[in-house]
Image 1 (tube, each protein chain N blue to C red):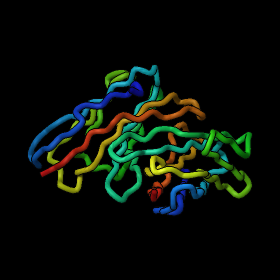
Image 2: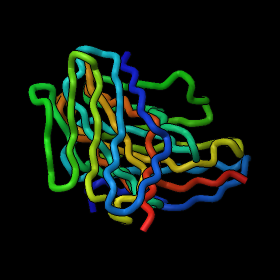
Image 3: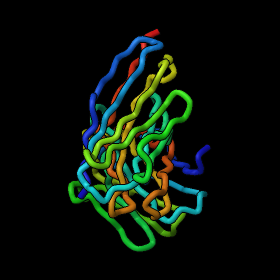
Image 4: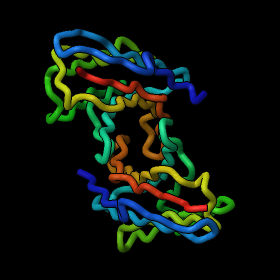
Length: 111
Length: 113
């Protein structure tokens, strides 16, 4: 089955800095890679996703890149703000509709 | 409101109690999931129900019993739980298409005393 590794587990940045979270996956058949944000006490919510037919996708301050050859994808947040503080989960979907999630990254943005 | 509703939001139960968690989705999805989220641990898939199949994580103890009477409702029946079962239990739903987004409920914060 699919295996998703996510790093780092904790990321601390100053407001205005950039943050990068990286994930690798094992199933070469995976073709859908969503990212979820979970604020404290709230549900995980999709913030951006990428499909295997593109290498990069941007939405304002967030972007995701995908390298299918190396089987890794990354989340980039620019100009971080305190409200970006949350746990971020990557996921991958391969031959099954069931997503496999990474372990999560706790992002802390210091004002 | 995302269309996935879980009740109750909080539950405190003793180890000898029997309780049930409920999840309801109004998104027309055909797959529903239970996840366990413990502190400092990854999201743990417990059960999946879809039109075609039921998927079970073999590491989930038998004191957790799922029920899916239709495509919109999912239950998790709990009995003789242990303190280590205290966690946030998240329900999610999606279509079974490979590029379909999963929508999560708010979760039930379970404390076993």
